[in-house]
Length: 346
Ligand code: NAP
Ligand code: GDD
Image 1 (cartoon, protein in one colour):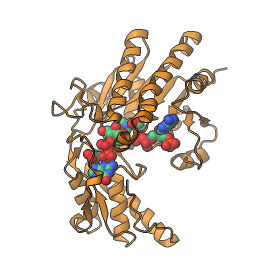
Image 2 (cartoon, rainbow, N blue to C red):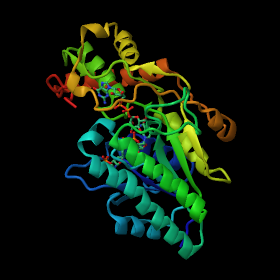
Image 3 (spheres, helix red, strand yellow):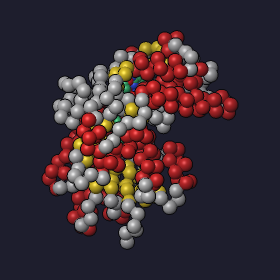
Image 4 (tube, helix red, strand yellow):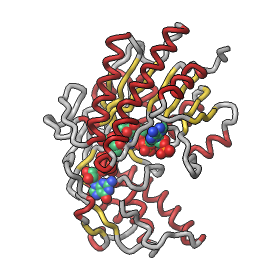
């Protein structure tokens, strides 16, 4: 029995983007179904508030991108109107250490979901719209500046190669079977909910902790890499807008501005009255076997067709993250829970 609320399935709901997207969809009146993988400790912190607030608007299910049968059963039982596939081993650096499991979740996982959608759609007749989390990492050793939907791909990591398969298999299922399947080619987007081993959060967390004496130094790799950094809360709106279009398509989502890791350090430490040069140490072990030197997106198509615009500037993003991490560090100090030299070695 279908209820009147639109139903969305989000894989990766416990991640940064999944948590913002779930909040957006619940606020729009969707019933959100979130897929959570089993872990020895509970990893639902980012959606805890939502679980408490929206008892009727959110249902969680166990599932894993490696489990084809489980994914198919989930889609058969939920019969979602929209599926947002955000689940992935999303760390580029880690993908060099775990290439096979990255490929299995990020590439074949997408194929498993597409097959399940195709089968359920054929059986029940109701269309299921699909969003795939593609990435600016696809451009890698980019041949054009800025990068748009027509820029050739040149992936530079096992992560990027896995996302290349996922991107093309999504396009292929759209062209072969008429699925309403869209890929968002999202450039880096950050927030206070960003995982602590991505460079922005690693910097803001360390700057805040150093300012309170909870940490002494910060080890980083390549300070000269540059990225087009936006705010995650803005980017999930673009995902939703893609699935509201009559026709599926692929869109670059970016700010159109690029900054180096060094600039991110300058702004973050500067906000707390410090000079990053006094605390940041370069550690060669944090360099990657192959680097993506610079990314800069052209979001013109999304501006025109989706009416989407980023709402936060680079300076606002840094401020938002530093302030949130300062609050967290103050709490650690008060609780006595600050880890000694808490910087992760990763
Ligand atoms: P994230 O914070 O790392 O979240 C990843 C999510 O995937 C988590 O919920 C994680 O579960 C889940 N997951 C990982 N492996 C899984 C598996 N085998 N089965 C089921 N779930 C699994 O990533 P994010 O920043 O939110 O990014 C969301 C998506 O967008 C990812 O696909 C990422 O590759 C892509 N993307 C991100 C960016 C960006 O800048 N953030 C840019 C472009 C594309 P746990 O909580 O249990 O780990
Ligand atoms: N993580 C990390 N840690 N990166 C560092 C460090 C460090 O200590 N020092 C320098 N960097 C550099 C990396 O070499 C890279 O050039 C840049 O900082 C950004 O690294 P990450 O924050 O790990 O992000 P990413 O750009 O590799 O990947 C993120 O964005 C992609 C979109 O372009 C992830 O969210 C991917 O999932 C996403 O697809």
